[in-house]
Image 1 (cartoon, rainbow, N blue to C red):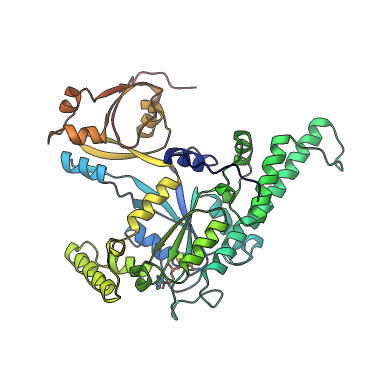
Image 2 (cartoon, rainbow, N blue to C red):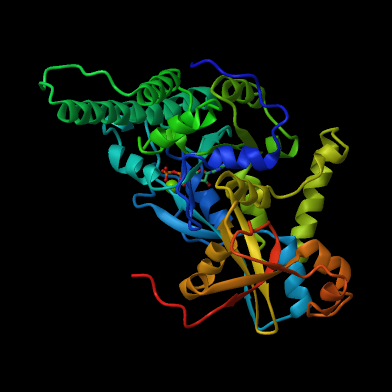
Length: 428
Ligand SMILES: Nc1ncnc2c1ncn2[C@@H]1O[C@H](COP(=O)(O)OP(=O)(O)OP(=O)(O)O)[C@@H](O)[C@H]1O
Ligand SMILES: [Mg+2]
């Protein structure tokens, strides 16, 4: 692994998010994708996240052949509050796009299984939920015949890294060709490459050869980041490790694999781990919208937890689905702003750091073109001040209704009205 600078302990969440976003596409329409071996629960979990059966889940390896995109509604209490306040006829929450990618197997980077097609599907998403099987079941076939999450993590990670190694070697050959051409050198020569290109390449290669995602490395210079962005590497995408356990293990908050998984992840650049259980989530989802049935299911689970001799706030039983969706959005550095009125309450998705005119452009390109100003109230101010009223009168009275210009950086949870000039000329 390349050397690291001192840990950035003082770094806040915001800076971490921006660092995570450094290699990504700057777009609001980003997608997470499920990656893992066949039969680990990707389609099941995709369905659960979508809250509907969009993808076919079956006990059969490769049952997902085409990537299947679903939209998961982002759980958002601020949005719900605005909906309750306005009670409008139209309600549009933010969604996270999630792609259910078919299972990868060992050798996929060289075309095994459904091979390279899957890897190109991974290349098309912006962040990865790396789903790992940690549940025992005689009924669910494992492609390698036994349950061993560490072996499986190695398998998937090395396929992604092997693919990146192949991309890197193409990139370096292309760069050498470019330099030869620029300097009029013979095809057989081995020209020196630019200093930053070389150091970016060397660092990436070292990381990839140690099976460590490039994304996890903190000490690239800005120049290196600019170059690496064009390398087209899969492991520059943010990755969340999702551990699919049995319902029983989920209720007791872990199994024998979890500490080993944590150690493995730490040894491979670190990353967020979310333990969950498709079995538990599926049972909960099957109760549809019957709130009473869901409540009694949770109570039954809590009794099971007590019967196991476990108690305390750490053993509360609740769905992990909201956490998974939020974590996906955070990994992609996405946030919401709201428009709220008598006709519609809507959450709009933007990347962190988006300026007001570009945020306006998410609503309509004309709004960006003719942007004049944004009238903004912070959600917390609105909630504290509006006193049951729908509009912003009380917020204005308190001097908390702001006029913001072109250089305003949108904040998570802004409630906005954009003022724009409809006659602004179109860009040529
Ligand atoms: N935690 C769990 N406990 C028990 N069974 C589970 C669990 N999670 C998933 N399963 C079962 O495993 C089987 C395979 O799941 P699924 O079809 O979602 O896998 P997949 O990863 O999408 O596979 P493929 O790559 O072949 O498409 C299903 O029968 C599902 O119900
Ligand atoms: Mg599937």
